[in-house]
Amino acid sequence: MNSAIGAIIGLAVAIVLIIRKFSPVYSLLLGAVVGGLLGGMGLDGTVANMITGIKDITPAIVRIIAAGVLSGVLIKTGAAASISHTIVNRLGSRHVFLALALSTMLLTAVGVFIDVAVITVAPIAIIIADRMGVAKFPMLLAMVGGGKCGNIISPNPNTIIAAENFDAPLSSVMAANIIPAVIGLFVTVYVIIPLMSKRHSNPIAEVAAVNTNDESLPSFWASIAGPLVVIALLAMRPLVGIAIDPLIALPVGGIVGICTTRQWKRTTESISYGLEKMSVVAVLLVSTGAIAGIIKASSLTDALISVLGQGESARLLLAPLSGTIMSAATASTTAGATIASASFAPTILASGISAVWGAALVNVGATVLDHLPHGSFFHATGGAVEMNIKERLRLIPYESAVGLVLTACSIATYLIIG
Image (cartoon, rainbow, N blue to C red; front, side, top):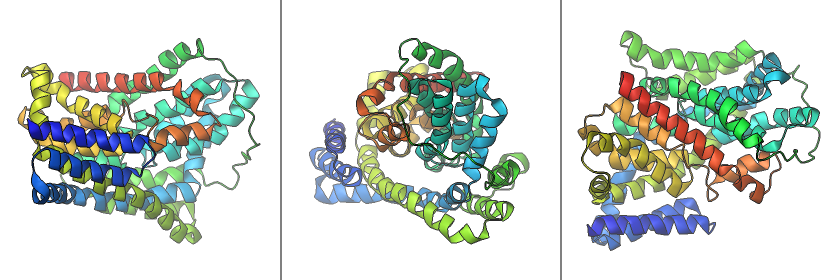
Protein backbone atom coordinates (compact mmCIF):
# COMPACT_ATOMS: atom_id res chain seq x y z
CA MET A 1 0.00 0.00 0.00
CA ASN A 2 2.93 2.34 0.67
CA SER A 3 4.02 2.08 -2.95
CA ALA A 4 0.52 3.13 -4.08
CA ILE A 5 0.55 6.16 -1.79
CA GLY A 6 4.04 7.05 -2.99
CA ALA A 7 2.94 6.82 -6.63
CA ILE A 8 -0.07 9.04 -5.93
CA ILE A 9 2.09 11.64 -4.17
CA GLY A 10 4.63 11.54 -7.00
CA LEU A 11 1.87 12.08 -9.56
CA ALA A 12 0.48 14.92 -7.43
CA VAL A 13 3.93 16.56 -7.32
CA ALA A 14 4.12 16.37 -11.11
CA ILE A 15 0.65 17.91 -11.47
CA VAL A 16 1.43 20.79 -9.13
CA LEU A 17 4.67 21.55 -10.95
CA ILE A 18 2.94 21.46 -14.35
CA ILE A 19 0.22 23.80 -13.09
CA ARG A 20 2.99 26.11 -11.82
CA LYS A 21 4.29 26.28 -15.42
CA PHE A 22 7.31 24.10 -14.74
CA SER A 23 8.49 21.95 -17.67
CA PRO A 24 6.10 18.96 -18.03
CA VAL A 25 9.03 16.71 -18.94
CA TYR A 26 11.02 17.48 -15.78
CA SER A 27 7.85 17.64 -13.69
CA LEU A 28 7.00 14.06 -14.59
CA LEU A 29 10.58 12.88 -14.09
CA LEU A 30 10.75 14.51 -10.66
CA GLY A 31 7.32 13.10 -9.82
CA ALA A 32 8.59 9.64 -10.74
CA VAL A 33 11.60 10.00 -8.45
CA VAL A 34 9.47 11.26 -5.56
CA GLY A 35 6.90 8.52 -6.10
CA GLY A 36 9.51 5.79 -6.12
CA LEU A 37 11.36 7.01 -3.05
CA LEU A 38 8.22 7.61 -1.00
CA GLY A 39 6.89 4.25 -2.17
CA GLY A 40 9.83 2.47 -0.56
CA MET A 41 11.55 1.43 -3.78
CA GLY A 42 14.87 2.94 -2.82
CA LEU A 43 17.06 5.02 -5.09
CA ASP A 44 18.34 2.11 -7.16
CA GLY A 45 14.90 0.54 -7.43
CA THR A 46 13.33 3.86 -8.40
CA VAL A 47 15.82 4.43 -11.20
CA ALA A 48 15.49 0.82 -12.38
CA ASN A 49 11.69 1.08 -12.56
CA MET A 50 11.90 4.41 -14.37
CA ILE A 51 14.28 2.94 -16.95
CA THR A 52 12.03 -0.10 -17.38
CA GLY A 53 9.05 2.17 -18.01
CA ILE A 54 11.01 4.12 -20.62
CA LYS A 55 12.18 0.91 -22.31
CA ASP A 56 8.59 -0.34 -22.53
CA ILE A 57 7.47 2.61 -24.66
CA THR A 58 10.61 2.97 -26.81
CA PRO A 59 9.13 1.04 -29.79
CA ALA A 60 6.11 3.34 -29.77
CA ILE A 61 8.34 6.43 -29.66
CA VAL A 62 10.12 5.25 -32.81
CA ARG A 63 6.78 4.79 -34.58
CA ILE A 64 5.62 8.22 -33.44
CA ILE A 65 8.74 9.85 -34.86
CA ALA A 66 8.04 8.05 -38.16
CA ALA A 67 4.50 9.46 -38.09
CA GLY A 68 6.01 12.93 -38.31
CA VAL A 69 6.59 12.45 -42.04
CA LEU A 70 2.86 12.18 -42.78
CA SER A 71 1.90 14.95 -40.36
CA GLY A 72 4.52 17.34 -41.74
CA VAL A 73 3.49 16.67 -45.33
CA LEU A 74 -0.19 17.28 -44.59
CA ILE A 75 0.56 20.69 -43.07
CA LYS A 76 3.41 22.02 -45.21
CA THR A 77 2.02 20.99 -48.62
CA GLY A 78 -1.31 22.66 -47.88
CA ALA A 79 -3.10 19.29 -47.92
CA ALA A 80 -4.65 19.85 -44.48
CA ALA A 81 -5.91 23.30 -45.48
CA SER A 82 -7.28 21.90 -48.75
CA ILE A 83 -9.22 19.19 -46.93
CA SER A 84 -10.79 21.67 -44.52
CA HIS A 85 -11.60 24.21 -47.27
CA THR A 86 -13.31 21.53 -49.36
CA ILE A 87 -15.50 20.27 -46.53
CA VAL A 88 -16.56 23.77 -45.45
CA ASN A 89 -17.32 24.83 -49.04
CA ARG A 90 -19.30 21.69 -49.80
CA LEU A 91 -21.46 21.78 -46.67
CA GLY A 92 -22.00 25.53 -46.84
CA SER A 93 -23.24 28.04 -44.30
CA ARG A 94 -26.41 26.10 -43.44
CA HIS A 95 -24.31 23.42 -41.78
CA VAL A 96 -21.48 25.56 -40.50
CA PHE A 97 -20.92 23.73 -37.21
CA LEU A 98 -21.05 20.33 -38.89
CA ALA A 99 -18.56 21.58 -41.49
CA LEU A 100 -16.12 22.82 -38.83
CA ALA A 101 -16.47 19.70 -36.70
CA LEU A 102 -16.14 17.36 -39.68
CA SER A 103 -13.11 19.23 -41.02
CA THR A 104 -11.26 18.99 -37.72
CA MET A 105 -12.35 15.40 -37.21
CA LEU A 106 -11.04 14.34 -40.62
CA LEU A 107 -7.73 16.19 -40.23
CA THR A 108 -7.14 14.60 -36.83
CA ALA A 109 -8.27 11.19 -38.06
CA VAL A 110 -5.69 11.20 -40.86
CA GLY A 111 -2.79 11.97 -38.54
CA VAL A 112 -2.68 15.71 -37.79
CA PHE A 113 -2.24 16.65 -34.12
CA ILE A 114 -5.56 17.80 -32.67
CA ASP A 115 -4.26 21.23 -31.65
CA VAL A 116 -2.67 21.72 -35.10
CA ALA A 117 -5.94 20.63 -36.72
CA VAL A 118 -7.89 23.25 -34.74
CA ILE A 119 -5.33 25.93 -35.60
CA THR A 120 -5.55 24.93 -39.29
CA VAL A 121 -9.35 25.17 -39.41
CA ALA A 122 -9.59 28.24 -37.15
CA PRO A 123 -8.90 30.91 -39.86
CA ILE A 124 -11.80 29.58 -41.91
CA ALA A 125 -13.99 29.48 -38.81
CA ILE A 126 -13.11 33.07 -37.94
CA ILE A 127 -14.15 34.36 -41.36
CA ILE A 128 -17.41 32.41 -41.25
CA ALA A 129 -18.11 33.77 -37.77
CA ASP A 130 -17.48 37.35 -38.90
CA ARG A 131 -19.77 37.00 -41.91
CA MET A 132 -22.58 35.17 -40.13
CA GLY A 133 -22.34 36.58 -36.60
CA VAL A 134 -21.66 33.15 -35.13
CA ALA A 135 -20.60 33.07 -31.47
CA LYS A 136 -17.05 31.98 -30.73
CA PHE A 137 -17.97 29.47 -28.02
CA PRO A 138 -19.91 27.02 -30.22
CA MET A 139 -17.49 27.63 -33.07
CA LEU A 140 -14.49 26.50 -30.99
CA LEU A 141 -16.46 23.65 -29.44
CA ALA A 142 -17.32 22.37 -32.92
CA MET A 143 -13.62 22.22 -33.80
CA VAL A 144 -12.50 20.77 -30.45
CA GLY A 145 -15.34 18.24 -30.42
CA GLY A 146 -14.61 17.18 -33.98
CA GLY A 147 -10.92 16.88 -33.11
CA LYS A 148 -11.68 14.62 -30.16
CA CYS A 149 -13.84 12.41 -32.38
CA GLY A 150 -11.04 12.14 -34.92
CA ASN A 151 -8.36 11.57 -32.29
CA ILE A 152 -9.78 8.23 -31.14
CA ILE A 153 -9.65 6.78 -34.68
CA SER A 154 -6.35 8.28 -35.80
CA PRO A 155 -2.74 7.13 -36.26
CA ASN A 156 -1.76 9.86 -33.79
CA PRO A 157 0.63 9.29 -30.86
CA ASN A 158 -2.12 8.53 -28.34
CA THR A 159 -3.54 5.70 -30.46
CA ILE A 160 -0.11 4.38 -31.43
CA ILE A 161 1.10 4.25 -27.84
CA ALA A 162 -2.09 2.57 -26.56
CA ALA A 163 -1.96 -0.04 -29.32
CA GLU A 164 1.74 -0.67 -28.67
CA ASN A 165 1.34 -1.10 -24.92
CA PHE A 166 -1.53 -3.55 -25.40
CA ASP A 167 0.28 -5.30 -28.27
CA ALA A 168 -2.75 -4.74 -30.50
CA PRO A 169 -2.86 -3.94 -34.26
CA LEU A 170 -3.05 -0.18 -34.72
CA SER A 171 -5.64 -0.47 -37.51
CA SER A 172 -7.94 -2.53 -35.28
CA VAL A 173 -7.66 -0.05 -32.40
CA MET A 174 -8.49 2.77 -34.80
CA ALA A 175 -11.47 0.86 -36.24
CA ALA A 176 -12.89 -0.06 -32.82
CA ASN A 177 -13.94 3.52 -32.09
CA ILE A 178 -15.35 4.49 -35.51
CA ILE A 179 -18.99 4.14 -34.39
CA PRO A 180 -18.43 6.16 -31.17
CA ALA A 181 -16.59 8.83 -33.20
CA VAL A 182 -19.46 9.23 -35.67
CA ILE A 183 -22.06 9.32 -32.90
CA GLY A 184 -19.93 11.77 -30.94
CA LEU A 185 -19.69 14.07 -33.97
CA PHE A 186 -23.45 14.33 -34.35
CA VAL A 187 -24.09 14.65 -30.61
CA THR A 188 -21.53 17.47 -30.48
CA VAL A 189 -23.12 19.34 -33.40
CA TYR A 190 -26.80 18.74 -32.77
CA VAL A 191 -27.04 18.35 -28.97
CA ILE A 192 -24.12 19.88 -27.07
CA ILE A 193 -23.58 22.95 -29.28
CA PRO A 194 -27.29 23.98 -29.23
CA LEU A 195 -27.23 23.54 -25.44
CA MET A 196 -24.18 25.80 -25.20
CA SER A 197 -25.60 28.38 -27.61
CA LYS A 198 -28.50 29.02 -25.26
CA ARG A 199 -26.11 29.98 -22.46
CA HIS A 200 -23.26 31.72 -24.31
CA SER A 201 -23.92 34.01 -27.23
CA ASN A 202 -20.85 36.27 -27.16
CA PRO A 203 -19.78 37.32 -30.66
CA ILE A 204 -16.29 36.53 -31.87
CA ALA A 205 -13.55 39.07 -31.17
CA GLU A 206 -12.20 41.20 -33.99
CA VAL A 207 -9.19 39.60 -35.65
CA ALA A 208 -7.02 40.37 -38.62
CA ALA A 209 -8.40 39.44 -42.02
CA VAL A 210 -7.36 36.02 -43.25
CA ASN A 211 -6.72 35.20 -46.89
CA THR A 212 -9.00 32.33 -47.88
CA ASN A 213 -7.87 32.13 -51.47
CA ASP A 214 -7.34 28.40 -51.98
CA GLU A 215 -6.28 28.43 -55.65
CA SER A 216 -2.71 27.57 -54.69
CA LEU A 217 -3.77 24.61 -52.56
CA PRO A 218 -3.61 21.06 -53.92
CA SER A 219 -6.85 19.34 -54.86
CA PHE A 220 -8.86 17.45 -52.27
CA TRP A 221 -8.10 14.05 -53.75
CA ALA A 222 -4.40 14.80 -54.05
CA SER A 223 -4.45 15.93 -50.42
CA ILE A 224 -6.28 12.91 -49.08
CA ALA A 225 -4.30 10.34 -51.11
CA GLY A 226 -1.48 9.95 -48.57
CA PRO A 227 -3.76 9.27 -45.58
CA LEU A 228 -5.84 6.86 -47.67
CA VAL A 229 -2.70 4.89 -48.53
CA VAL A 230 -1.80 4.70 -44.83
CA ILE A 231 -5.27 3.41 -43.93
CA ALA A 232 -5.11 0.85 -46.74
CA LEU A 233 -1.68 -0.40 -45.65
CA LEU A 234 -2.68 -0.67 -41.99
CA ALA A 235 -5.95 -2.39 -42.93
CA MET A 236 -4.11 -5.18 -44.74
CA ARG A 237 -3.41 -6.99 -41.45
CA PRO A 238 -7.03 -7.51 -40.37
CA LEU A 239 -8.32 -7.88 -43.94
CA VAL A 240 -5.81 -10.16 -45.66
CA GLY A 241 -3.38 -11.11 -42.89
CA ILE A 242 -0.44 -9.05 -44.19
CA ALA A 243 1.07 -7.04 -41.33
CA ILE A 244 2.58 -3.69 -42.33
CA ASP A 245 3.94 -1.84 -39.33
CA PRO A 246 3.05 1.85 -38.79
CA LEU A 247 6.79 2.49 -38.87
CA ILE A 248 6.56 1.75 -42.62
CA ALA A 249 2.97 2.73 -43.42
CA LEU A 250 3.07 6.28 -42.03
CA PRO A 251 6.20 7.49 -43.88
CA VAL A 252 4.95 5.81 -47.08
CA GLY A 253 1.75 7.84 -46.76
CA GLY A 254 3.83 10.98 -46.42
CA ILE A 255 5.84 10.15 -49.53
CA VAL A 256 2.63 9.49 -51.48
CA GLY A 257 1.30 12.84 -50.25
CA ILE A 258 4.39 14.65 -51.54
CA CYS A 259 4.00 12.97 -54.93
CA THR A 260 0.25 13.53 -55.36
CA THR A 261 0.41 17.17 -54.31
CA ARG A 262 3.53 17.68 -56.47
CA GLN A 263 5.23 19.58 -53.67
CA TRP A 264 8.63 17.93 -54.08
CA LYS A 265 10.44 21.13 -53.13
CA ARG A 266 8.78 21.01 -49.73
CA THR A 267 9.97 17.51 -48.90
CA THR A 268 12.79 18.58 -46.58
CA GLU A 269 10.67 21.32 -45.01
CA SER A 270 7.78 18.91 -44.41
CA ILE A 271 9.97 16.23 -42.83
CA SER A 272 11.72 18.80 -40.63
CA TYR A 273 8.39 20.23 -39.46
CA GLY A 274 7.00 16.78 -38.68
CA LEU A 275 10.16 15.77 -36.84
CA GLU A 276 10.06 18.96 -34.79
CA LYS A 277 6.47 18.32 -33.71
CA MET A 278 7.03 14.64 -32.97
CA SER A 279 10.31 15.26 -31.14
CA VAL A 280 8.45 17.31 -28.55
CA VAL A 281 6.04 14.42 -28.06
CA ALA A 282 8.86 11.87 -27.98
CA VAL A 283 10.69 13.73 -25.21
CA LEU A 284 7.44 14.03 -23.23
CA LEU A 285 6.86 10.30 -23.66
CA VAL A 286 10.24 9.54 -22.09
CA SER A 287 9.14 11.24 -18.89
CA THR A 288 5.66 9.71 -19.01
CA GLY A 289 7.28 6.31 -19.47
CA ALA A 290 9.39 6.94 -16.39
CA ILE A 291 6.44 7.75 -14.15
CA ALA A 292 4.44 4.93 -15.74
CA GLY A 293 7.22 2.55 -14.69
CA ILE A 294 6.84 3.71 -11.08
CA ILE A 295 3.05 3.37 -11.18
CA LYS A 296 3.29 -0.08 -12.78
CA ALA A 297 5.74 -1.26 -10.13
CA SER A 298 3.56 0.10 -7.31
CA SER A 299 0.35 -1.31 -5.91
CA LEU A 300 -1.69 1.59 -7.31
CA THR A 301 -3.39 -0.68 -9.82
CA ASP A 302 -4.53 -3.02 -7.06
CA ALA A 303 -5.69 -0.06 -4.98
CA LEU A 304 -7.79 1.30 -7.84
CA ILE A 305 -9.33 -2.12 -8.43
CA SER A 306 -10.20 -2.43 -4.76
CA VAL A 307 -11.97 0.94 -4.94
CA LEU A 308 -13.90 -0.04 -8.07
CA GLY A 309 -14.70 -3.53 -6.80
CA GLN A 310 -14.27 -6.96 -8.36
CA GLY A 311 -17.42 -7.09 -10.53
CA GLU A 312 -17.50 -7.31 -14.30
CA SER A 313 -18.64 -3.69 -14.63
CA ALA A 314 -15.74 -2.54 -12.45
CA ARG A 315 -13.23 -4.38 -14.65
CA LEU A 316 -14.78 -2.80 -17.73
CA LEU A 317 -14.58 0.70 -16.25
CA LEU A 318 -10.89 0.33 -15.34
CA ALA A 319 -9.69 0.96 -18.92
CA PRO A 320 -11.52 4.23 -19.68
CA LEU A 321 -11.26 5.45 -16.07
CA SER A 322 -7.48 5.00 -16.02
CA GLY A 323 -7.23 6.97 -19.27
CA THR A 324 -9.43 9.72 -17.85
CA ILE A 325 -7.49 10.01 -14.59
CA MET A 326 -4.09 10.10 -16.26
CA SER A 327 -5.18 12.57 -18.94
CA ALA A 328 -6.53 14.83 -16.21
CA ALA A 329 -3.21 14.58 -14.39
CA THR A 330 -1.18 15.51 -17.46
CA ALA A 331 -3.77 17.54 -19.45
CA SER A 332 -2.66 15.55 -22.47
CA THR A 333 -4.30 12.77 -24.46
CA THR A 334 -0.92 11.35 -25.43
CA ALA A 335 0.61 11.42 -21.95
CA GLY A 336 -2.61 10.18 -20.38
CA ALA A 337 -2.93 7.27 -22.80
CA THR A 338 0.75 6.47 -22.31
CA ILE A 339 0.71 6.30 -18.52
CA ALA A 340 -2.65 4.52 -18.35
CA SER A 341 -1.87 1.88 -20.98
CA ALA A 342 1.66 1.24 -19.68
CA SER A 343 0.50 0.99 -16.07
CA PHE A 344 -2.81 -0.85 -16.37
CA ALA A 345 -2.56 -2.96 -19.55
CA PRO A 346 -1.62 -6.23 -17.77
CA THR A 347 -4.50 -5.87 -15.29
CA ILE A 348 -7.01 -4.91 -18.00
CA LEU A 349 -5.97 -7.86 -20.17
CA ALA A 350 -6.14 -10.20 -17.17
CA SER A 351 -9.74 -9.15 -16.62
CA GLY A 352 -10.72 -10.70 -19.95
CA ILE A 353 -10.91 -7.59 -22.14
CA SER A 354 -9.18 -8.07 -25.49
CA ALA A 355 -6.04 -6.15 -26.38
CA VAL A 356 -7.83 -4.17 -29.10
CA TRP A 357 -10.66 -3.05 -26.86
CA GLY A 358 -8.39 -2.44 -23.90
CA ALA A 359 -6.35 -0.01 -26.00
CA ALA A 360 -9.45 1.55 -27.55
CA LEU A 361 -11.14 2.14 -24.18
CA VAL A 362 -8.01 3.63 -22.61
CA ASN A 363 -7.62 5.86 -25.66
CA VAL A 364 -11.19 7.15 -25.58
CA GLY A 365 -11.04 7.67 -21.81
CA ALA A 366 -8.03 9.95 -22.32
CA THR A 367 -10.23 12.44 -24.22
CA VAL A 368 -12.49 13.24 -21.25
CA LEU A 369 -10.20 15.66 -19.39
CA ASP A 370 -7.23 16.26 -21.70
CA HIS A 371 -8.23 19.92 -22.16
CA LEU A 372 -7.56 21.16 -18.61
CA PRO A 373 -5.72 24.50 -18.19
CA HIS A 374 -2.34 23.07 -17.18
CA GLY A 375 -1.89 21.60 -20.67
CA SER A 376 -0.86 23.18 -23.96
CA PHE A 377 -4.06 22.16 -25.80
CA PHE A 378 -6.17 24.50 -23.64
CA HIS A 379 -4.04 27.52 -24.53
CA ALA A 380 -3.35 26.66 -28.18
CA THR A 381 -7.01 26.23 -29.07
CA GLY A 382 -8.12 29.33 -27.16
CA GLY A 383 -5.43 31.41 -28.84
CA ALA A 384 -6.51 30.16 -32.27
CA VAL A 385 -9.75 32.17 -31.99
CA GLU A 386 -8.46 35.03 -29.82
CA MET A 387 -10.25 33.75 -26.71
CA ASN A 388 -8.91 34.82 -23.31
CA ILE A 389 -8.38 32.37 -20.45
CA LYS A 390 -11.56 33.35 -18.58
CA GLU A 391 -13.62 32.73 -21.70
CA ARG A 392 -11.76 29.54 -22.53
CA LEU A 393 -12.50 28.11 -19.07
CA ARG A 394 -16.23 28.21 -19.81
CA LEU A 395 -15.74 25.67 -22.58
CA ILE A 396 -14.34 22.94 -20.30
CA PRO A 397 -17.67 21.38 -19.16
CA TYR A 398 -18.85 21.06 -22.75
CA GLU A 399 -15.55 19.56 -23.92
CA SER A 400 -15.78 17.08 -21.06
CA ALA A 401 -19.32 16.24 -22.17
CA VAL A 402 -18.00 15.36 -25.63
CA GLY A 403 -15.37 13.08 -24.08
CA LEU A 404 -17.97 11.42 -21.85
CA VAL A 405 -20.26 10.81 -24.83
CA LEU A 406 -17.40 9.21 -26.75
CA THR A 407 -16.48 7.05 -23.76
CA ALA A 408 -20.07 5.94 -23.13
CA CYS A 409 -20.52 5.08 -26.81
CA SER A 410 -17.25 3.15 -26.85
CA ILE A 411 -18.27 1.11 -23.80
CA ALA A 412 -21.68 0.44 -25.36
CA THR A 413 -20.06 -0.61 -28.63
CA TYR A 414 -17.78 -3.00 -26.76
CA LEU A 415 -20.73 -4.53 -24.91
CA ILE A 416 -22.62 -5.04 -28.17
CA ILE A 417 -19.93 -6.23 -30.55
CA GLY A 418 -16.76 -6.61 -28.44
